[in-house]
Length: 94
Length: 85
Image (cartoon, rainbow over all chains, first blue to last red; front, side):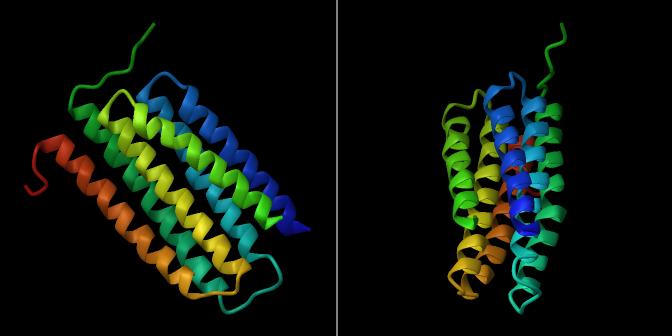
């Protein structure tokens, strides 16, 4: 029940973030949308895989994977944004 | 339920591939590569949970480390023209 609700929330977040990746017109906006879909959506999906059917032996691996994703995704996004900014990419201001 | 979630994540993976192919800048392609890798990792974890095969989870962990390293190294290379320094 809880796993199904969390899976629904995760799928909704992933779909919204992918829509943002496809439809936003600016690099930094797309980076923000990818942060929504990757960190929040996929994190909630991994939590829904963890809480399904009690705590087992394979949940330690899922916990390590979740910690790894939550640790490395912001660093990768920051690295891409810093690379674009120092190379002269600027946001279009109306 | 998990199969439906896998289907949604796989559909979004195919949708992000469009940004990987047609991204206007290099950084869009890097971002799309990162997103595609993360979605593949989560699909691997879901398959390993449903089929009771814990080896695939170790594969997913190692793939997460390697894809993160690849994204950071490529963005530093695009930024500076070289990785070191």
